[in-house]
Amino acid sequence: MQLYGREWTRRELEARIGRIEQVGGLRRLQWSEGVEAGNDQIQVRTGAGLTYYASPSRALDISLAEFGGVPLTWQAASGDAHPAYYDASGIEWLRTAVGGLLMTCGLSFVGAPEEDDGQSFGLHGRAHHMPARHVSVMGQWQGDEYEMRISGLVEETMIFAPNLKLNRTIRSKIGQNRIELTDLVENAGFETTPHMILYHFNFGFPLLDGETTIDFPSKKVIARDNGIPIAGYDRWDLPEAGYQERVYYHQEFDSDEAQVVIHNPRFPQAVGLETTPLSVSLNWSVDQLPMLVQWKMPGAGVHVLGIEPANCYVEGRAAERARGTLMMLEPGESRTYELAIEVTADA
Image (cartoon, rainbow, N blue to C red; front, side, top):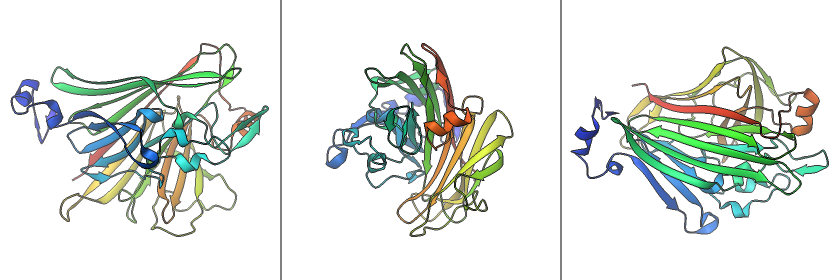
């Protein structure tokens, strides 16, 4: 294991600590007041700087993520609200969306509210507000490496409606500032059903400031809305009251393995006045998730960059069907999605 600037064997490390949680590990928590009361979280500490919180109450999505005690993510004003407050109509999703490192949008609908095929859909579907079951939290030695693994099952189902199941696994290792996410989505029903999924990663202050740059793997960038300028999509702006969100679609990737890199040359340290160059990379397979949506929102109070690999865009199901890009899952058919986040201090 690489930790504190050197390699350790398991026994060398165990000789110096009472238990593994002294240097890193897993811990289950529960909020106790306000709209957050009853919300479960799992804290993951890598011991190398990265800490994050997975949420069994919310599809095992990931809320706050920090490096060295300094946040990497944007958190919504509602906090880690309990999903019982979720309202599926219209844009009410926004009242209880957490922000954080990851919000899962889907599983049968993504995008703006609409009526499609006789059904009414609210913003971005239900997945982000669906509690996981069969949640397993495991930390174990594998030779001289200590792996932390969280897994669970999320179900989107209704009588006379699609029955989609999401099996999610999150992995990290002590000594490595990396999160690996593996999802398997299965149509457990007996009819062909639409399947839309978007991974809504949310980055914020102080990772984002006036010097931050964003490197995209795309050769072509278009704006979702007419009249939105393309210039500046790869840079960050200071907070601006009244800023109108900008949504970009990235196309024509350099390779099948896509990577977005957010780089801050002066990322602050939690103690003292020192800064360090820091990069956060998001990696995924274009074969699995062929679309990339960017949400640029440097507004005052909503100061967030969304990087969103997906199998669809955000105009709703009818638009995907009209384009011929709506994914359909046959009964018993499944899709696997693999993504990774890595934090690198470039000092």
